[in-house]
Image 1 (cartoon, one colour):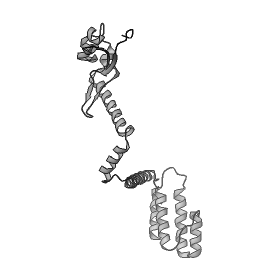
Image 2 (cartoon, one colour; image 1 turned 180 degrees about the horizontal axis):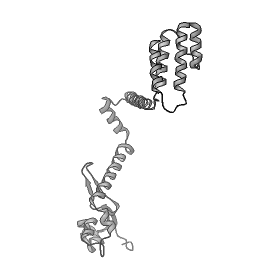
Image 3 (cartoon, rainbow, N blue to C red; image 1 turned 60 degrees about the horizontal axis):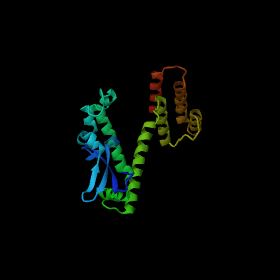
Image 4 (cartoon, one colour; image 1 turned 90 degrees about the horizontal axis):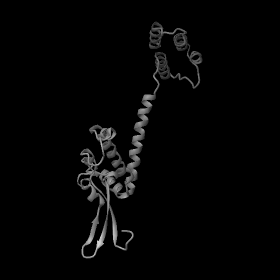
Length: 237
């Protein structure tokens, strides 16, 4: 037709496709594409010239998958790879992936201002830009604090029995006005308390000696008798 001066047009559409009920859309692939030419004939209008319709009309009526299954397109046996790709399992996997891709395009890539305002109105009852920002910042801040709290909770190091007893001792001494200074060792702390109060200091020195003996012992296993004795001495302080 290109050799003659005629009014013509080229049409390109899709034939067939798979309906995805969850998204209520029809999935079409490049293999579903079909093209034909039309020529304007005086007195008849547009006349269709479709070689596929003349040579293989079932391709238009059935679609490529059904045509292959009936042996009307491929010569010989249908390839094993094609049959494997048409199994129910792979079909469901492929459709699941395509649903995910469709939702990504719809909810993220095509998330325009009108859709944003509609979402904010449903969420906050208003589409005001100011309240949108306040609401989003508040939600992000709450999410950050929640995640930080969970992270801090799980990252908090567990205290061994000696550390728990020492913290109990420090809290008990703090109530009497003796607080350990930053960087002050256990022995230095006990000596300072002894200089200020001989009665309390004498007991504390005994506790610290036992604490050092128990906590920094070269024995591989923890001495439960020393721990029990240490706990009893702290309780009697």
